[in-house]
Length: 135
Image 1 (cartoon, helix red, strand yellow):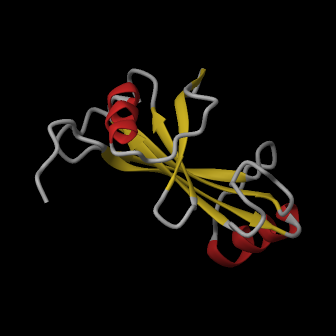
Image 2: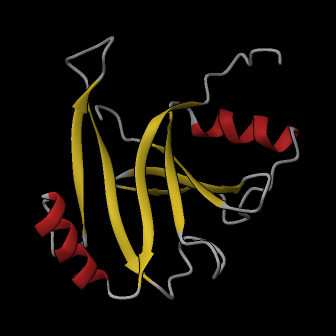
């Protein structure tokens, strides 16, 4: 396969999955695996630094969602991975040319960066995230 000119995924920004009882399951992960679950959002953040630029900080989120959430995609999809990208607009433009399904909502911007959603070859919802500057 020919290498693409635009670097696409630069890392994993988060791992999200459904739970029948997010608070109870979060407590299980806290007790048995030591995850520092934040009760305000039901997840935790794993902080790290880039290997090539140790001054640059990053984080990977881990979070539980209610079993009936639509955020992760269809009702059968129990997990969703959030992939970090350096330039969301360019990545989406290339994916559009390749006829990859892109959520018609387009890019959503927030204090946490820019987000967009696509589906993989088996219809699984994937979140693409361009972190804000400095993260």
